[in-house]
Image (cartoon, rainbow, N blue to C red; front, side):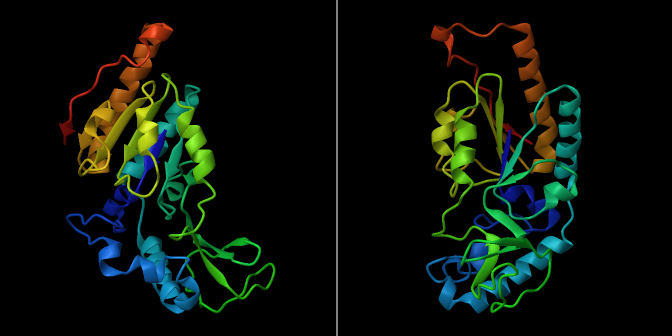
Length: 262
């Protein structure tokens, strides 16, 4: 299971939101999220919010999937042939995984290509159009509509089912967390699950998640680390095949990997 953040799209030219990278400046250093992406201020800042999301939508349109996205697609196809699930859960609101051909991507923070109304929560596809802040819902004629991404101070409907899925992971599974600061989504409690193998990959380890909670920490660009991650996962699958499940009293005893910088 991949759980990804904005860092996986940086090499496609889309900036992260919180952490500056070598070639891009974080969005929230250039824009005030309380003005352009907050439900508490949206009704009074609709025009500014739409201007930001129109610009973001155009940035996504120009971007192309990078080698990481294509690698995940190839790996997912290989897994299907072996009756193994490779699941992608992303905090990203772009469609780069989909454009690379990855199936069944779950967006926990919505999708920039959609709009939704605040009347009856209807959603509809708009692609990469520039949109006017005073447009109306295509279904119910509601006059207050917003981009189909989750704002601050807005309920994220996918959090509950995603958390349930993450909590269900077992010794057979591998959780790969990539390109995220682990700041927004409450993933830290999941990392205390001693059964599932946990891998972190990013430019730096998040300060809010202790290194000891990970089995492997692999620092570097996602396009550089993904092949090493696949090797670790394949070794884990082989180990499961070669060794029977541990007795209940032995659960939680597993080897920790060393930090790797690529």
